[in-house]
Length: 465
Image (cartoon, rainbow, N blue to C red):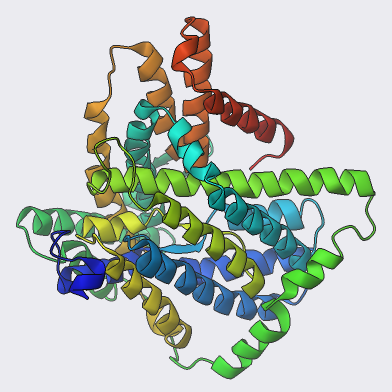
């Protein structure tokens, strides 16, 4: 293990890597239940299969695809990042492509398969590395801070500390509602998360190993008497029946979907729509992954002196293969999860972290009721805490130069406000190009950066995401 993962060289050990892998898994385990629900709901809307059958099929597809993608990251790229069907991309799959454009479940999987094959081709020919090189240095630095804010906002929202408000969009949870039966559960969840955040910060300050994982476990336990952690009535699972639904409904259904993509549709219109959908899936996944890799790796000191990530091409190929295999298994686009930051914040530095996380996804197929016990209020503090760690990169930016400050600021602020890493990078690239052009600094703009900016404009004005 030492020879393969180079643990000493990366200043880590087996215990730290295992705890980091478990932390990453618990931080992103919600996807095991949320992804099947979203895709099954979309299939139900367009009558593309019964909700329960699609849910069961996607449940297994989610676990297996996450395991494959994460193990690839650990064993091939040897970096501590996990993969699973991405949030946002699955909603786009279910509610835009299926419910909006009227494509069936298997047809949409076929479109994802095409985008996955495109990923592999782009990565094999080095185009993705060219894309990474085209991102300005200041935007790369801002990505880490932007992901920090995005993680913190995600955690605050998941915990119920920040809530919807029709007048101001967001506001603080009303703690006074703890006195009412209707409001008490939400307030209790927020309190558990706040306790967890303070606990993790204190343990981290005292250099206690596994501070984030300990925080998640403690929050889960104290959540029981507070009514936040709900124990299931039964820990039994109909493994055989659910696995049969996976074989019947999800596995390889993308191929039948490919054969029926143009049925009942105008050929030219269908071709244009499919091309734009493939581009949308591709661009969001590509820049979400690139942003997560660069931003998180920077905080973990995994970048070289030029700001590049070793094994970036291998990591991108892992992402491409995971998306393709995920489509064949029966789930939406698989991408690198920003929650990997939780494990890296716990000290994960090698592929061993990913191997542990990947194995946990297999275990989850059998022990789903146990995994489901952990409430979002217990994992949210980990995201908020890691967000605080990552925001520190903001001090490296040159705020006196507006041609650097504005693209950096937009990269940072648009990630949490639009709930998308890809959108943050898009606004950073667009503003960089436009401001440099306006200042007449043409030589400071890389040609491929302009190409990417144009592609984002096309995507924004054709298909919303």
